[in-house]
Amino acid sequence: MNEVSGEMSSTIQTFYHNTGLINYAYDRLDSKKWNIIAKGIGELRRFRVEEASHKIAKFINFPRPEVQRETQLYMVNLFLFEGLSFLDELTTTLSEWAQIQLLETLQKFENQEICDIRPWLKSTNDSVVLFALKLAQIYNQFEVKDTLMELLSHTNKDVRLNTINVLTHLYGIEAKDILKANFNTLSIEEQISFFGLLEKLVMPDDEPFIEEHLFHKNFEIQLLALNILKEINIDKYMGFSKLSNKEKSKAMIKSENTI
Image (cartoon, rainbow, N blue to C red):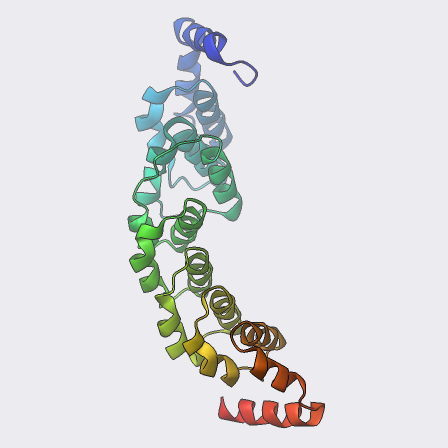
């Protein structure tokens, strides 16, 4: 099944059913051993046995990650985006490796119509939210911007950070004012990501904010602020470049005291 396609694949599937070999895979699902269960799910996935989905779905939150992964791959390989419905029930952590495998599977198939990912962006399972953010970016889900805006105040820093990056990708200019207003409460990583957003979506009225952070304590933010200033006001940029190191040091101390 791994090496054939088309008519030959259909012939082997029919053979698999008619010989009763499929029953051995079903029997494995009733095993007390996790590795036997995983093997059974993997076999049913390779032979594309769709009618096994109701039996396999019960393993979504199985204690062993190996069984979880086989279940997830079965669902997505056979049902694509519809198969991601398991995310509605997932209470365990969707590992980074599992997310990569699922995305690779989905991207093998072109011209797919992605489902509504908003429920997953609102999930109480942070790993599901992070996976949904990847989907939003890869599949350019501009229609979920309002939901993304809500995630800017999420309790999980990784979620907030990834949300800023997705909004940058989706030209989420609506996020600028919110992030500006709360800039000093953001982590350094979030502040850097926000300046990455500004670099892409900067407007002339952002200039005072940019100037305010030319002497930020973080060197990466300083460089980003300088690059942005150069884009929107070359004269001010040149004036800053002419400052002596002593003047820059004084300005930096003043800026840190202000913050």
